Length: 233
Image 1 (cartoon, rainbow, N blue to C red):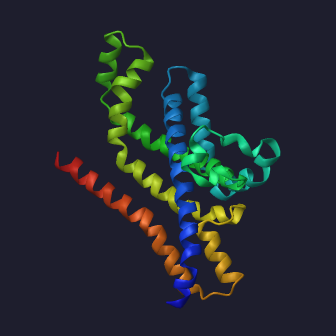
Image 2: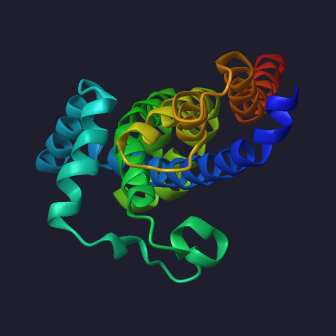
Image 3: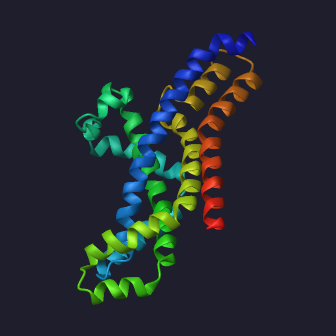
């Protein structure tokens, strides 16, 4: 117990960093996945090919390779200030300081998870009755209007449960960010306490597990509730 009390502040700080990383990466993945699914169902063949190629590549490349690329190759071709979005640094403290690998970790998780978000959303698009899109075209709606008013609202509703599962997987995947330059996240803090400071591994790992469960279990329970509501309707 003394080990947990003496190291709780460090682990809590790591949890806060990991939470910020997961939240920003989830937003990025959802936006990217939405753009990709639009490409995949586009009536323009080159756009469909781009979307299909992206999803095929990132669904079949290990996440560690994506992290290695962003940690070692991305710094060589871009500046660390590429995420200076107005107001974002005020909400997420880690973006307000010089912590480039935090930004690179967001990119890695977003571009990797975005492919899986795309496929989850595409399953939602396939769940929309084809007759609705045909009726919209008969009424004179353009492809963009059809997406905005008919297809995507229903696709998001149908895909909410698989999307939640993708985000839960992303939260767990974020644990490897600390091994690619991100100092101070939950897994990095635990590894440092065990290997550098010689702290007992079991209480540290149990605490880390509890922190990850704080992020994943409530989301899982929410998904179960949403799924039950869909079944009963």
